[in-house]
Each structure stands twice: as C-alpha cells, then as structure tokens.
Length: 114
Length: 111
Image (cartoon, rainbow over all chains, first blue to last red; front, side):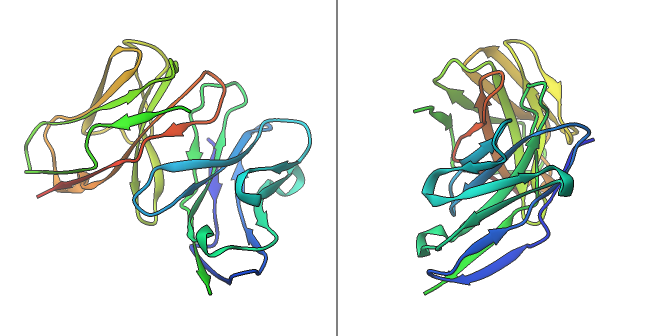
C-alpha cells in the first residue's frame, strides 16, 4: 500500500528566509508525486507534480521540488518565503498506472513571521 | 480553468438525518473523488468514480455512499449522519492521468 509521511506538523520561518518541507513516500515502483497548498477556508491548489524525467520540478509561486528515489523523498523548497505563503502544504503520491487514487500526507502548517 | 463546485460551504445537520453533498465539475473529467479532511489526519479518500454509474470504495467508505448518474456530478450521501462525520469534505475531479482539481470544500457539522 502506498503511504506518505510529512514529519513536520508545523514550521515557522521568517519572511525572506528559505524553506524546505519534507515528504517521504512508500510505494512499490516509481510513483506520481504532487505538492498541494491549502489557504484557510479554501480547497487544495496544485503547486507542482512529478511524473517522470527531470527529478527537479518547478512549480507555481516560485516553488520547486526534487525527487530522490534513493531516499524515497520529494521535498518542497522555496529560496525566499513571502508572507502570503503561509498556508498548509500537502504531499501526495499516486500510482503510475493512472487512476489518480492519491494518498495524502497529514500536512505541514507553514507560518511566516514578518 | 477547471471549476469544481460544491453546493454548500457550510452545513449543519442533526444526528440520524440523511445528508447529500453535491459536487459538479465543468471539464468533462472522467474521474471524481470524495475526501474528508480532519486536523492531524490529512485527506482520506471516501469514494471515487472513474465513469458514470461506476463507484469504488476508498479507504474510509463506512457510513457513506455515492451516486454518479451524470458525468459532471458526483454526490456523497450520509445515510444516517453521526457526530463522528463532522468534518470538511472535499470533492475533486481529474482526467484519467492528471492532477486532481479540488472544490472549496463543505464543512459539515452534525449535532
């Protein structure tokens, strides 16, 4: 069975500082990987996805993530955080066979200090 | 832009009531999903559908059923609402192999 672990429940960073949110997955083959962001009272918005190819993927809002097969990780990064990035972030894994039955992590709540 | 619309943002129901949560998407997506979101538990899949009149159980289907009579509409039904079904419910849709697009959610309170 596939699973996702986001070890950090809460993270606080200062505006302008760099950010890394951790995500580890368990899956029998190379999975599809996603990062979503959820602002308060909203649904989830896709930040970026990895299906195949280049292991460093670029997303919206200046975010990027790197797929590391040897570590079963897909960490999300941003070089300089803005106050508007405060939100909850979810990592998700899905089967490469399609069907899109995604499994989500428990989320990381990001707080940005001004 | 894909639009996934959930009919209610907030809903308050009594224990034992039958509850319908409606979701409509406008992009002719084959796949539709219902998740519930609880603090500390992330999103958990309740039911999903790959086509009209098709449905498959997710990870936590107990106490729920679904209906998909038309491609654009996917309904979640709580046959007899209970307090432990108080939660945020999120609907999503997608093409066969593509990211999920989410609605804004329905926050259901069962008293």
